[in-house]
Amino acid sequence: MDESRLIAAAQQGDLAAFNQLVLHYQNFAYNVAYRILGDSDLAADAAQDAFIKAYKAIGHFRGHGFKSWLARIVTNTCYDYLRSHKRRASESLEGMVERGEQPPRLHDTGEGPQAYAERQELNQWLQWALQQLTEDHRVIITLIDIQGFSYEEAAQILGISMGTVKSRLSRARARLRELLQENPELLPARYRSYTGSSVSSHS
Image 1 (spheres, rainbow, N blue to C red):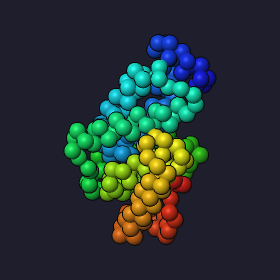
Image 2: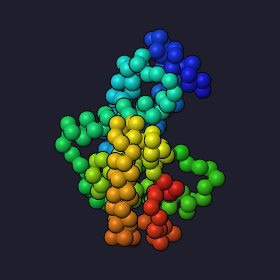
Image 3: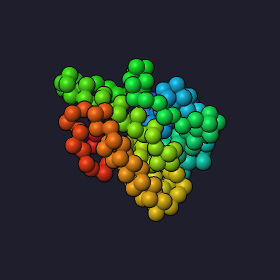
């Protein structure tokens, strides 16, 4: 995908070019929204609204870092949703599993049934744990540990200082470790000895 060409065309009003960008980033936008909001329907709505905002604002986009620019729009849209719905999910893992809510993930054909089941179970635990965090901590974990943005990128996306990024991330990781220690039975067996500070390698 020639992203620069598509962006330039979209800035000239080419809707087809922008739709190509949407197709490329739609899973990314949905997954960010789902991790933050914890609700599949709200996440789909937020991702759609974010793309509409992005299309309206793309004329103001300058330079590189389209993914970070889009992440800022998605994140701000999620904050708007959280404020408007006055909600912070704190549902049980069992309730989420019963509804089968998970972010979309392609099944790796080289992955065995047991590994696939463990990955799904881990994703369910991660989503439950994220919903126990404050909104700001949930967002910082999503951007850095799940989506892989750097500290600098996260600071730019959220419009906060590097010090604030590091402080929020440290507190968020500490809370996730507490949840692991309090609820080890919710993890797949081979992850129960987990003592690291990041969830990125298992998300």
